[in-house]
Amino acid sequence: MTVGSLHKENPALVYNLPGIGTGVMVAGSEQTAVVAMIDYSKAPYLSTVHIVNKSDNLSLRHMDFPDDTIIATVDSGIVYLTMINWGTSSMPVPENGNEGSCSSTTTAD
Image (cartoon, rainbow, N blue to C red; front, top):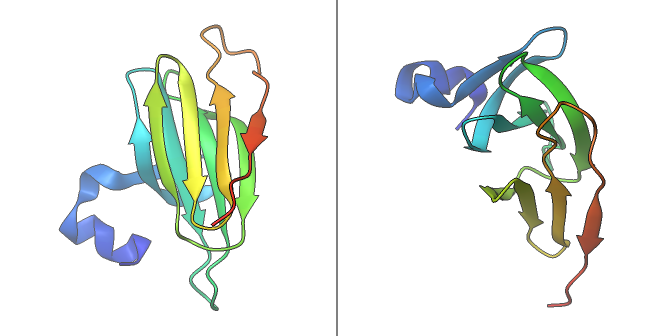
């Protein structure tokens, strides 16, 4: 499914980031959106995931990924990102708009 097809199939997942582009919201909370920007022009579909403050729609932090297989959730103010064969990263979501730190754990298959 491409970002363009989401406009018709599920417009609630389409997320516009000013100055960056249109992406797909893969997870979120009241204050935070986890938005994937995916390059569908060539395989393996490189992606960038943005952690977005919903109140001002600004990207607080972003991470680049080698493909478009991304699993994300937000729990108790922490964003968890998981990629198949790459492990899990967690990022505290700042309540006051200041950048948080990022830690990652790599797991073997």
